[in-house]
Length: 246
Image (cartoon, rainbow, N blue to C red; front, side, top):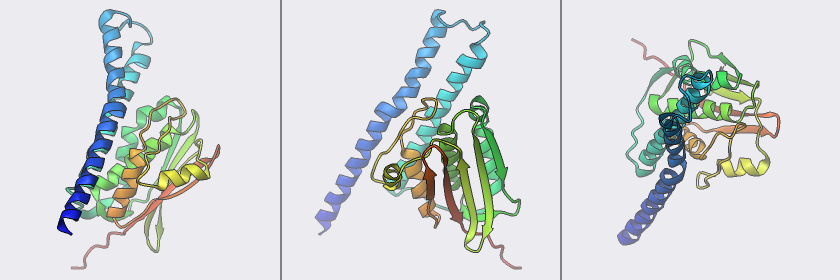
């Protein structure tokens, strides 16, 4: 029995390594290659640093591609820690407004580039009892996905409401939405479902897998409501932080 368990664990570890190498070899290599190519063009003089479009176009593309690579790397490391069992969840009191505002600042350039209206409605007293790093990763990935799949000029809202079960977060967009088959695939953690954004932004599908896993570790789950060409809403409820009485 012990040998069978060890063999099963070895098989799972090999599958994890294979998926990691696949993502590193393709999904992480792509943005790094794009950055190197643009830097080579600048070095050779193909792209003129003194041109009118250099800051608005070239530098923006470099920055966006670097953000994409860093986000993927963070997801990859978080996923690897979770799958290998070395991720430690430490719950504490977290004001949700702090996480949402930090995430909005990180995504400001992408929001402005696509002329998206981002609205935030988070009560100041919305304090949850959860792990900070995993919770922030969930918000970063869900808002990043909303931006990716919302057409230029669309809207995204982040709303937190007080419910009997905890503080509920709803991230709603006016994006391209998903059909029933895509929703089934996206909810399956064993499937690697991904598609490009409205302006050909790349995706790996790893972010949503990570969100579902991290929410589970915080005693929550991800609910998805989506309609093609209308938009999507991603919802989850986190436990309220209740201060101890003196």
